[in-house]
Length: 88
Length: 174
Image 1 (cartoon, rainbow over the protein chains, first blue to last red):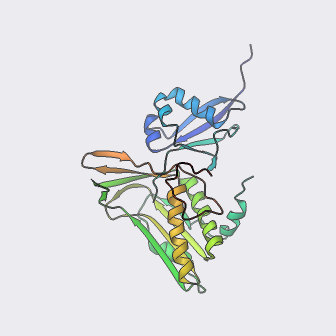
Image 2: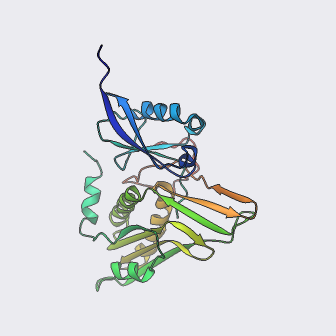
Image 3: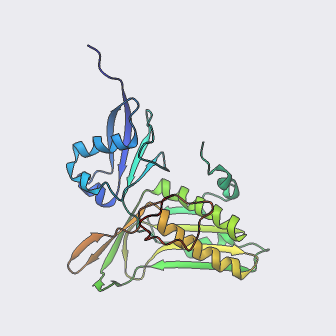
């Protein structure tokens, strides 16, 4: 029996999202090859169900650049889910 | 390949000190020193400080959190657009994280330019864009508790960014 190949990504969450993930800012996930940022969020929300209600309003970044929800991920990517901002 | 690489070349000569997220008190004199030049007749310095109120709510202190590495890239992007759009010579942006008391400076922006008009305009543009694009968040603490402030949905810095674009437009899409 073969298992689907996986990629390892690191997810960064901040502010209220971080608190919903138990305070941890950095979460390691393994996703199917070909997974996109939306699927990455779904995998994160499977682990932390309280996140689902926060999905709208989030921006996404991959490797420190803003990206879309259908950005294909690769091994070693760093995905950040960015709540509405309040810098300055 | 990043479509933003051409913007980065405008700030490539600037040192690593121009765009910083720091976890200690901001030193505005440092930013001034970074944008001074003999050819600049104008220097604009903006400091954002912690207010003791937010609307009707009293604030006792703030906590700032940042995606520091990405925020510094965003600062560089904003500076590059400001330089191209307003023709100013140099921009420096520092933002602080951690616990800040009333009156402490959370963000400082310095702009050096040949003339004052572009310096003022660029400085305002930079803080306006920072509030739209920088992955930074503040948590307000008051007598009745604390809450994360959620402003606009974060968006990338646009090369042709309109400084008058309303951050509250629900239909805007970059």
